[in-house]
Length: 65
Image (tube, rainbow, N blue to C red; front, top):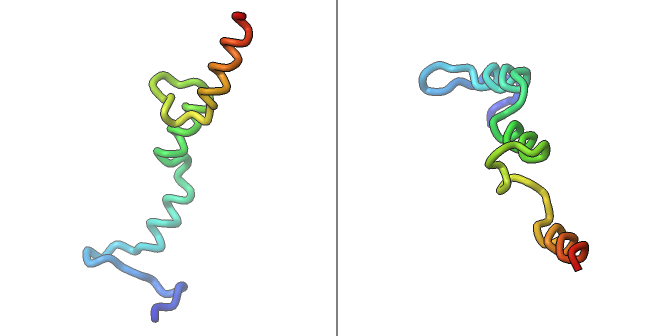
């Protein structure tokens, strides 16, 4: 078994733990950006939104009656 503190390298010689460390410090991931845009009303992000479509429909129809 490999010790987690021991450096792990890919077949190309990349230090896996160093890449993970740099990724953790690099800012938002692609998926985090998509989620943030969906929550703030970004264009074309409806499938990432947590809006309850059925609730919105009920509100619309309830107000128009």
